[in-house]
Length: 600
View 1 (cartoon, rainbow, N blue to C red):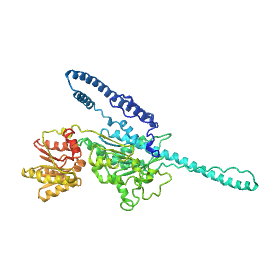
View 2 (view 1 turned 135 degrees about the vertical axis):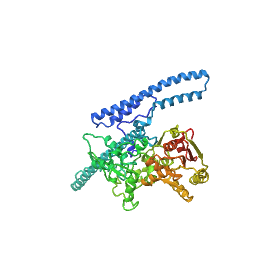
View 3 (view 1 turned 90 degrees about the vertical axis):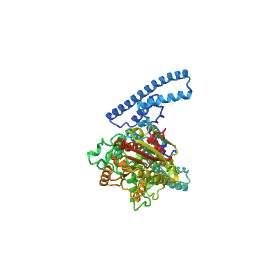
View 4 (view 1 turned 90 degrees about the horizontal axis):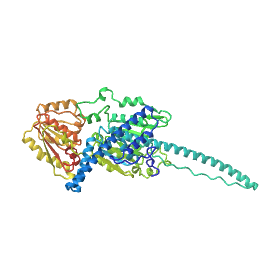
């Protein structure tokens, strides 16, 4: 553990543990002040701005604590009155919890929305899975992990530079002692012939061994879904970079802004007709194939550095996958060696990464922290023993941030989180669910499928063709939209409808713009009774489909908000439609986001 950079303090001062949110506010001030004092290279104006933000956060914290203390006093009076009424201890405890939860929800106090709440966990090297990322707290999350990544990379670079100086100094000392030994041997022979006394030979010092590196230089990997997200993260990295005596020069800055900023001004503007999460996901440049190497030196921050000679790699799973496949054929020998020494892995907006293509994410994670096939540039005298033994994955910190929990995201954390320091999961409970956002009066029916895990999709399809579709056909249901989240299930249902000679239109993520417009028009005017739609199509387009009278969810959507959005499309056409949702006992996470935890 002493060889690993994570064992040292990540900040210049150790951070205190997080205190209770309803406790003394001096801890929060202490954390914020130490964060501000860590990087003293900012200008005076910037320090004033940051101090003002810290004071505002402290005032909000004090107001929340005062309100909770007042409510606690009221709850104490109610507790005494309850004893007089003969209430049991369990009932009194439930009343107290209800009072605190209602007060917290009214004040909207959420410690996860603050970067100061994450930094102590990050600095102690825990693997972290936070499934509560929202457009509101995303800036704070990125600020926290950007600070942690900069501190980790600079700490490692400084340690390597200092040890290199010591090793070189010891090597010079050894060379000088060897020269003295050769001179002393010549004097020894001459003195032996004359019979004169001989001085002892000088002792040769041992070489200085410092194992402080990996096989390659890159030690931080940040996976992001779009170029706009990478633009924001790189800006944060440059802002948090300590300046020291002089400001560091940023290389290839014009090229970076040209490639990562959107060409049209309209791409920066939010669409008022789209939901807030859509504007958050698809703001700015939405290209999902990119990669960027950031190299840190004493005076220059070099962007677009080679992946084998940089400190921080920022990219999308697709962009890095194409780099691995492009090196002399598909998955050539040594193509993924630049991933062999990653010590800090960050997955931001993991739900969107899985919506793009989960195969690319799992491919990169499988290739990570392996012994390189072609370690030509590695200095084995400086490589850590944990890397040489193939145990570097146990010293890698993995940070996963997503908007919700899902089996795919949980499998990333459970399978690839092997950190010896332990791991922490932060979850946000869905108390009410998206069902409460339904505006109109629509009949909503949920039907549970009896199935086993190994035959889940087959049983779901059999239930659809035997129990659901005959009812739709007998009732001559027109304007029926069938929502199918998975593309594989979409192809299965589409082939079934084609085999039954049922007129329908379909929209998926691969449908072109003219085909989508034609399908929406035919469905709205009643020319076809059925329409198929996938979750990825709605995720990337967010069209309002008119003319829906009946809605069938082949499975619950991953994003709970999609349920209320589609149901509101039904309620907008007279309010006389119906909604049928198929689910199984293995869809608990999706069901919680729709109906709430208690109902699920």
